[in-house]
Image 1 (tube, one colour):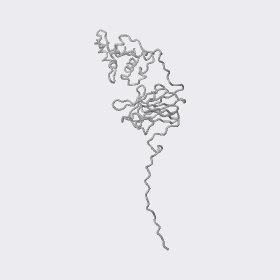
Image 2 (cartoon, helix red, strand yellow; image 1 turned 90 degrees about the vertical axis):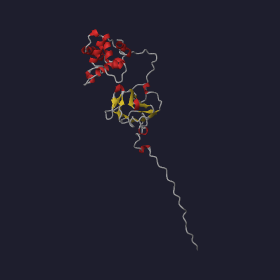
Image 3 (tube, helix red, strand yellow; image 1 turned 45 degrees about the vertical axis):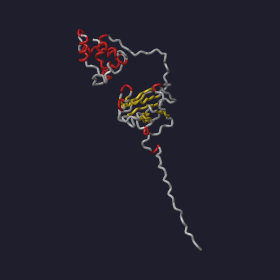
Image 4 (cartoon, one colour; image 1 turned 60 degrees about the vertical axis):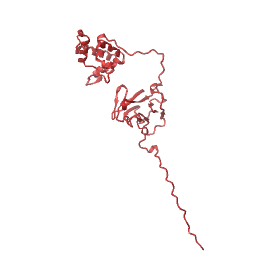
Length: 292
């Protein structure tokens, strides 16, 4: 009886399996997943300055050039924004290396949305306030808040934020309403001349202008009106009289108590800017001194 040797066919190694892609939940650099009620806002979405509305009061809308998102209120809910798209919910300044990869956060705590700076550049808030890293978060009120992050070569990157209030926040078109003029104050000829000299750097649009000193202002006024007996004290009393009038009418940041020490040029700086905003002072007023 013959026997046959059992032979084993040559083995063929199995092709290697393709590498597994890590799931988003395993990527420690990815932002936390948004809540179920989160909704993306596409690039090209209308500016939030036009208003926004949501069924739930306290819903936040945040929008950058590349798009944004909206998220309802809830303790600990967070919106991350910055340059590195995979790590944040909203990409801001993606082509500008001066913007931090994780620039800032919007976090809901205690019934309000709080803004924090996480990156190195500060976030410029309304009123010129700069919010820096490790500073206490800034509470955002209802309505529209534009936020800016400075970038390379003088660029500024805008993040629009809107927190809904109790009512429909879409502003009503008012095309035919009578224009409301800015609040203006009556200035005497001498007050206006003194303020134009004091603030001429602002009226000439100098970069980073500062008011002239009392001495500089008095010296220029003495040249313009040799017989008017302008002195440092007279200039100070004239300007302070205008500042006190505006302060009593509700214009902020015109008193030492509001500004705090050291005062420096702050009171005169705020006064001149208030007069420019109200159009009490305009660049053409420079003719009062240029024609002399």
